[in-house]
Image 1 (tube, rainbow, N blue to C red):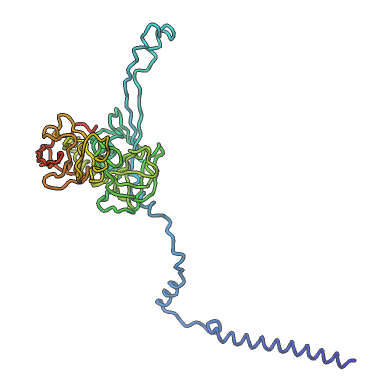
Image 2: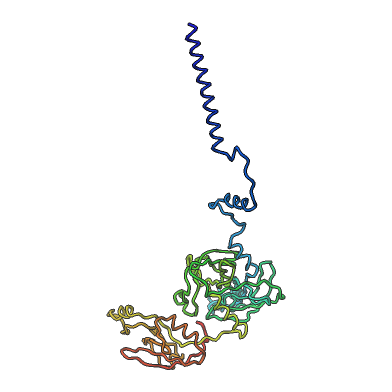
Length: 405
């Protein structure tokens, strides 16, 4: 009975010894495979150390800066952005019916005297400082007809502003403040270098919320004022999806480097996710004239016009209710001629189609408007028009546009 138990004990002991021996063999072989853990590392040079450090940086987790490019751009221009508050007093005419004896019988003799004959209107906009002397650029509609203009800097200082010049046609104005010669100045870029898809940063005081920044991209370029729906302006806007609301008007639109590329204008209250800015290159030229002369002279012809294509003309001509037949050509259709205008004096008529100006083909209303805008006051333009089946050559002398409306 004792021998079987002895044999079992010997077998169990042999199994434990075999397992221990196998573990030792595996450990020794592992150490031989990993010599870096068993042997001291060779000495490294400075170059080797830099390589190891470079290899340890994961490409999936690059270093993140403490500030974004938007922060850097806004910091570059932020102190030069100002808030513009305006006050304007309007006189209200008292309704003569208030003086009627029947009305006074019920409301008393003093009721009409209690009706306010004057009302004070307040406005809010933005702007930015052009130079250290205190010239501020903003929108014309921000300061137009204002009795008092107050310019507030970001640091809280306020100054009375004097409007040096307004141009309603381009919706630009220059305001002067006397604040010494050490004012922050906004760096100006070039709108000619702007491309669709570039970053667009709007800075201003929308809805009275001071020092507000919104971010978007440039969604399109050269969006004409006619396309935007303001035919009394002569502008090709920068269109952006950066939020622009009332109060942003006159503030800067920046590129990713913090340079001003446009002047924001809240001209379409119904615009959803779309904003417009006046290109800074256009604004530079207008601001220089406003500073020098206080106004800008714009030549005009005196026609209301529509871009005409053969398809549009054909659609009109096939309509049995159409009052006129239109030549099926590319050009500019004259919808109306302003009385006593250069066009009227030259013999242009409603229904004419303008085909050429000074020998250059005209295919859109925007092209014709830009051509006239770039001409000189008093310049004679040779205008080729088609009237019915005949063409005529007319000489039109440009004159100064007196009223934007």
